[in-house]
Length: 489
Ligand SMILES: Cc1cc2nc3c(=O)[nH]c(=O)nc-3n(C[C@H](O)[C@H](O)[C@H](O)COP(=O)(O)OP(=O)(O)OC[C@H]3O[C@@H](n4cnc5c(N)ncnc54)[C@H](O)[C@@H]3O)c2cc1C
Image 1 (tube, protein in one colour):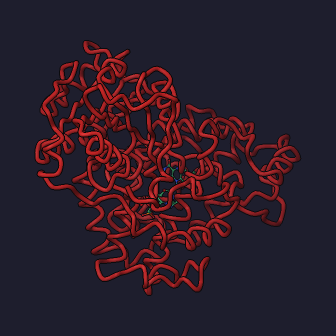
Image 2: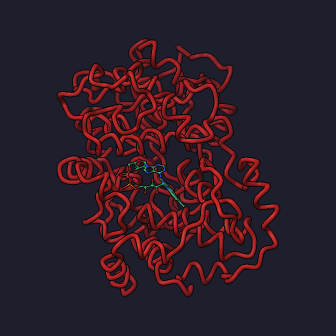
Image 3: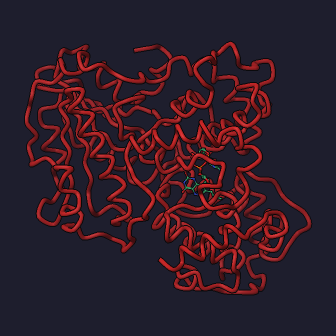
């Protein structure tokens, strides 16, 4: 285990590694892949160190918040890829999917009974921090969580950053020290098959060929159907990454913000694949910098300069700035307070003062959740964005900002607006329930931003956005035609 990566590992309980037990268990919760995965690397390391079997358990409950056919299918397509890869590499992989007839309650305790130690993912959001703590408190063996969230371990940073311009130089200064120690990109069959002693799972493993019948045997929390053109899993994620690097990365700087149908949008479309851990941010960095890039190519004399730091290509620098600075700022914000996000209390003081001053401002429109959800506002751009979200599970980044700002403007209170945004984003977006969901939603309220002038109704000094200026700034025709077609599905 490299020195640089020890900072990624945390022990969640006081229990020892039980050398008399059978295997090291990797509980795959957030990073659903075997390659480029720091937690999996650590589990392999422990199995080799203690000369034990390695078991990988991937489970899917049906009762998590916002569970739906849309999310389940995307996750089960990941199970399918993992099952194939586990067979190819000889890994002892135990997939479990909860259904009406196969309840999951108490299963993890059973699975952990013969574990010397458990390794899992240190993802700072949604139900995962609580699940980790609960199991760590219950089991008799050591419980480790590993931060494989990004290229730089989150514990490297002394505190959260209040703005991207503050975090950017911190990241630039650390990047060259950590990136050479990224997770292992792949294993050979010889390395892993030796760790499989064939111990059987204490349950009937899920069979990927039965995906449709499994889905029909589940009671979901939400009724959200699948999106036609979204396929989950690592193979689909890698394919998207390759296409992006080949044909869109060079256009990223110019084209990123233009609202367009996905085929004409110059972004990667990879946020859902990052969220479900099908692909790592280290892999995205490596692919976008290319094989002839080395750490020596970094422009280290200019930490904080987003135009030049990583590469000589401006578009690549901008892509990496979104992926590293903007993605990381949200993860870091949650790192020490994973419960954060349930309300607006952690917004900066200037925002809170603003909200106090403007909370009673007259709202020109006041929509109910039903009206928001069914895209029945007076504003054609807002409705188009909502239709894209509902029908495809995605939302173009620029439209996402406008979408959030308008919910604030046309809701009776700030709290109601936040709850509406959180519900719609988490229910429909494939990439929802992520630290970047909250950093994005709260950015609309002024988080990581600065005061803007003139002071306005409802917003005060929080940045304002309007549909009219969006129409002036971009040609919206294609996007509106695209969402109009979507509305007919
Ligand atoms: C109201 C609102 C809600 C949002 N909700 C989510 C969410 O639920 N999940 C989510 O992952 N992102 C969210 N974002 C951030 C951003 O919109 C998406 O990450 C981005 O649009 C994803 O598209 P992409 O993968 O094509 O990004 P690309 O432009 O290709 O960027 C590559 C990766 O960098 C990261 N990234 C890019 N832009 C941002 C950004 N502005 N903030 C944080 N990370 C970024 C993402 O991981 C993304 O996949 C939200 C933003 C707003 C304003």
